Image 1 (cartoon, rainbow, N blue to C red):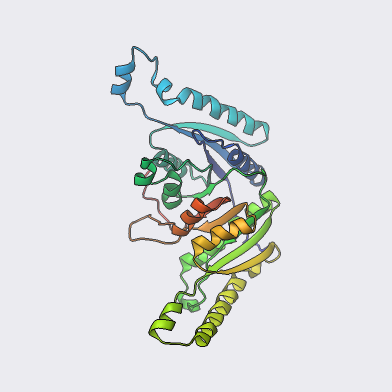
Image 2 (image 1 turned 90 degrees about the vertical axis):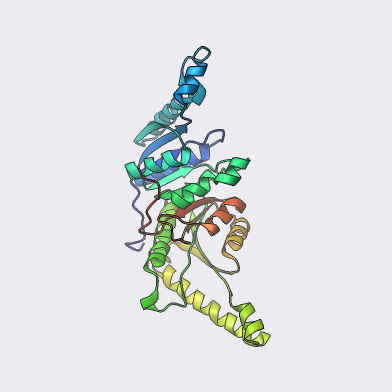
Length: 322
């Protein structure tokens, strides 16, 4: 194992999902803690009940906790904490009040959690369409790695895939250090999770022949000439992928090089290869501080049946302030 190929995990945040069975996600959090020695914080976020509303209902309802469900959530968090303790995991539980995305993001920043693990949230309703799904918000803006653990027919992951994006057409001096560091982080995280799960580690890279139309319609190249360019481009991507994966080859079961649109191909790949967990990065940056548009990650999240772990690039600063 390459000396730089492990990820140090010391603190995990498990976010309770309201109205969703998140037992698979909790079991995943327990396993990672057991293998890594990390501590576990079980978090539930309940609605903040305005004082004026409670006063209006005071004659009928004994406490604000009755409206928000805080008492039930506290009992459930304490039950999970006891369960974690019984399995040798040092755990704590926290009840937060307010906006789920904002409060858990502040929790992650204030307590420096390495990973946030949760089940996918239901995505129905106009609020989700207009304001943005909480899972998308967390992938874009939460400061740590976000692992969306989808319920599966088997509890343990058997196939973990690292989705990487090397840049073969940049000279060594031009390679974006942020992109390179993110690729390494993806490989490290995926290899560590594969070890935790005793799973197969696969690596996938999707490349695009984005200049094909320009070569045909603007440059007037023949089909044979265009095919030759495509073969050369593929070879470049293959060489860059091989160079990235080389230090991890004693852990990697198979390397996959696919052509097409990244989001669509990754979603198709996870189904055809029975992938349990896909590890990828959010790299498409805007000019707004701390804001990522994870187009590829979100496409996979929407259309793939596997779990997703989304990593942030180095230097990422969340727009959410503690």
